[in-house]
Length: 64
Image (cartoon, rainbow, N blue to C red; front, side, top):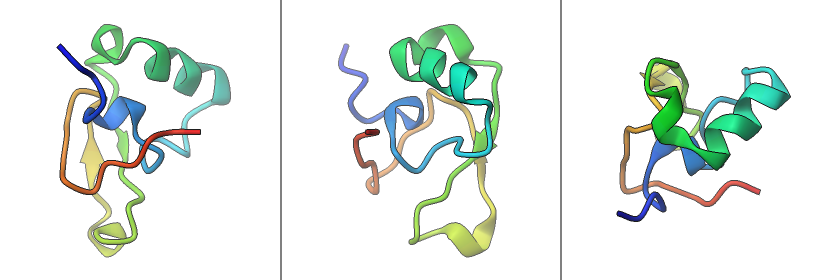
């Protein structure tokens, strides 16, 4: 299964998380299913969404 559309590997996900935790989520989002963090996509920023690393949407952008 491809993880290319999961929030945990998206550049909009979790910018408020500690750097090391975010790296671990990017490497293996399935292991961090209980984490919830903000989605900072410009399309939904005003909604202040909180999502899990396993969430997904059409605005997915690869993390750096």
